Length: 273
Image (cartoon, rainbow, N blue to C red):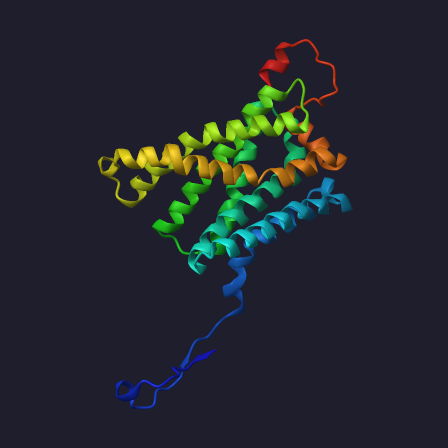
């Protein structure tokens, strides 16, 4: 690839300028496909996903991306901001899709282990999303990674608490209402945790954090972040509640009982889960 300056520069550049040659290798673009490669592997490798119904997980991803394109056009945000926010959205969306694809393998574990496995799955996929955005190690990369850790913690914690509330009777409307509440509740401390971690990465001096930043994180950034994270869930949850292939995974991984199911007496094992 050759780069040649073009335009009328007047006396500033009276002498002819030679083109600069930049040798671009095909594998320089590989990191940009890392996120989608993980999704493909999650579709192909697990035996349980070798079913055409597993491809339905692409439908929520398409809806999320279409919604994001609409938001991007309406807000008219700059290309750099769109790239950053798009990276966050894509990473969380693909991470959620991969979680749905591998959730069947978590059903044999107890509650805390299932939460940790879900957390680790989404964070690892998010790391691939960061790699697709920037393969260089920097403070910005570290901030992205920490942000995804807290974002995933909010996501998994809200699901776990909602599961605890709805495990006896789980209708779609009831589950989504409780999930909205707990995403908001967990989003506030999660945002504060990110603010503190961000200051430690950038300056390592917590005394520089002002009270206004905490208040902003709790009452403005936290609710906005929670709303954005919650709105990522409905396309996947509709698929989970409406499609038998994914509903089995939803109920198995979260140990949920259908709304019509009769409540059973509590047992020691059930509490331990």
